[in-house]
Image (cartoon, rainbow, N blue to C red; front, top):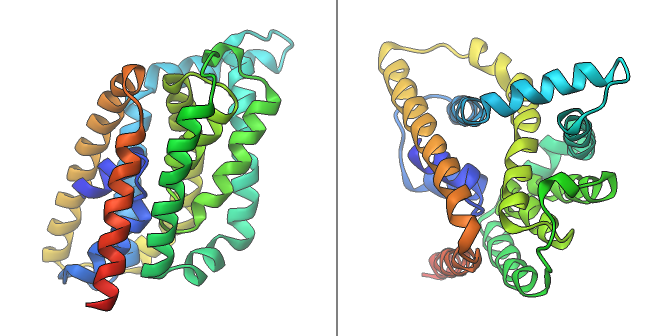
Amino acid sequence: GTVQGLTEFFPISSSGHLIILHKLMDLPIKNEVVFDVILHLATLAAVVYFFRTDIFHLLAGWFASLSGKVNYEGKLAWLIILATLPAAIIGAIFGDFIESAFRSDIIVALMLAGVGALFIVFEKISRQTDELESINWKKSLVVGLAQIFSFVPGVSRSGITIIAGLGADLKREAAVRFSFLISIPIILAASIKEAPKIFEAGFVAREFIILTIAFLAALISGFLAIKYFLRFSKKISLNIFAYYRFILAALIIISLFF
């Protein structure tokens, strides 16, 4: 649960870490998919609670825009919707296929290393001149299209969208904030899609306790990850996450041969 909370928002791939941990740990639960759905619900709760004030203003601005009164929040709400559409469409049609087809240790390792390299490149070439207020539909769409690649385990949804934000010349903190905001509808949609599996699965008391502990761990660690990652991104390069990804990718590849 703690790993999910941290890696959902740190750009190091939550799906990649969960695949690895499920192989390393013999959890006393019948359904690992349901376990992962519970963890994603926890991180959804964390990001919604953290951005609760922003969400209120975004919703108010969006409803106001329907009557022709467009302010900054209304515009940003529409841009979040635009950035969400590509991944929502591809996810609904091909999401399960992509995740199952690419669910392997070697793919996770390659994606960890590849996206890590992109971090180093975009930290170097991005001008990082624009605040979130200056984002337009073109930049929003670029970030949204990048989010499609997050279905491949090891890529990292936050990682690839932050990279796209940097590529659109957003300041690092602005790219991180936009990445977190567009995560809300995506995580919500994925949770709704998988929610029936929770009700289909039968739980014994022991499993319920385990799921509750995991949920709370993901909720708390996710909230802290958002809070401190936003502060961190103001001043410090994200290359440290690239180096972490390189090390983890190397360990995975070594484990395949020894």
